[in-house]
Image (tube, one colour):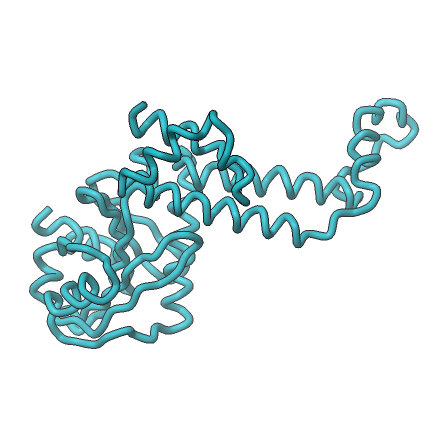
Length: 253
């Protein structure tokens, strides 16, 4: 069994450990325990599954949900009420919400082609900027910050675009987003503009969502560019012109 086969099997592993003794998962679990990359991926997926399950457990399920769903199959019998709309039924609306929740979760986990995962990540990171950032550590040197992240947050080596590497930094922080832990580094450009670089493991998004070419997108008041480099995905945000961000992201890549 290779890592790809193990991933496919572990995608079906239920949170809570009830599948731990199931022979169908045994070989994949052993491989995940031995392979650091696969083990890290499996840990992230397990946390995401647990979070989704917990949200569903906390939901208040209407008592008539089952009957309301079954009634939908008999809707043609109600010809005398042609203007019936399903969203006026709380039970049916709740059922639709469950379907959407699972669809969004599957898209996020599998890197769907609609880029919902990247959009959600981009929105969450710019929302963090709107709320303000408290740094884990401050320093003017980009090299000092990347070294601090590697030594104190186990983040590993980062490759910064050349123009950003030559700029001054303000500080850095490791954030939380679902099961992800993106690092944030804030830069002051020679023009005195401030830009913010988020970095996260690249396997969190599908290859069809983030490529090696910088992709420009607006998120509220923020211009952003995203790109992939080796095993990382980078997201650069700033209140500056979009072409300037593309230039910063592309320099040296």
